Image 1 (cartoon, rainbow, N blue to C red):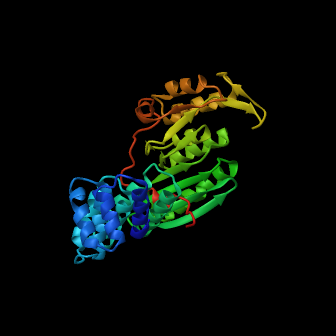
Image 2: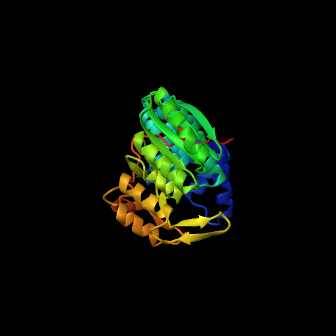
Image 3: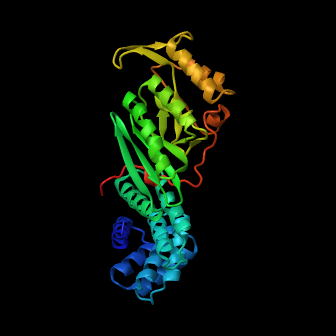
Amino acid sequence: MNALVRFALFLLLAAANAHAGPFEDGIAAFDKQQYGAALELWQPLAEQGHRAAQFNVAVIYEKGLGVAQNPAEAARWYLKAAQQGDMDAQYTVGMLYETGKGFSKDTAEARKWYAAIMASPPTDPATLKLKERARERLVRLTSATEEAIPYKGGRFVIARSSEGACVVALQGTITKDGVSRFDEVIRKAASLGCKNPWLLLESPGGLLFEALDLGIEVRRAGFRTITRSACASACAMIFLGGTERILAGSRARIGLHQSSRGSEHNHVCDPTSYSSATREMSAYLKSVIPTEADQVMNVIMQTSCESVEWVHGQRAVKLGIATGLEWEGVEVGPARRAQSK
């Protein structure tokens, strides 16, 4: 959202408020191009921690409206608003660090602010556009290369930063073809010089036995796994194959339930301990999380295939499903599917 649009919105809000105050008076002054008066009204509010006033003061100093342009002062106020969660300010701060205007050039700080935008919960259209812009800047900033390997049901996207960090995103359902293409993914990641690759799971699930096979390959190849959203059923089995397993963000969770027999639209739950699916799952869990396998299997067997037991936060760590709840040093952006503007 650019500054003029933002001010227009503030103006509409002010018109709807019968009891105008210093902030709204500042909007009225700005609308009349009385920038000095607007700054005089907003500056005290900004110093008191008023987030919108901090952003507006930053715009005035950045554009030189009624005052001399002052990139350092603008950057200071943008940073204050950004630290309070203003996403437009966060994006601007990222750009200022990226370009070295107002701040000393610092790509690590720029990446931090772009990543903060992408990790924020809101999903309204304006926020999604801002997140996409942040993602694009993050990709360029890390000099990431990105390659896609499609399969029937989805695709793998391999993204490598200039520092050698790699993320492989599994985007789509888990199918036989997806498993067969994973060897190609491993070879491609190695050819790109990937170091300790991450497998980012963006999958609704799929075929159980194929997921177990893929989980074994993930463990053999030394991949670490991560999800930032819901990862259930077959997806959960692949997640458990990671040498490290991270739940990133408040929406990340793992879903467990019994296996089922039959077709997708005509199936019955399988609560028995002697079926091939149950035996395969049990053996797989003992191979990837031997200490916690029995307790995780208990959760699975106690949950009908018609429902899902969601595990997240510290409970996931205590059960041995996750090894951590943070994703340090790895950018989310490069592995995501690009969205059109």
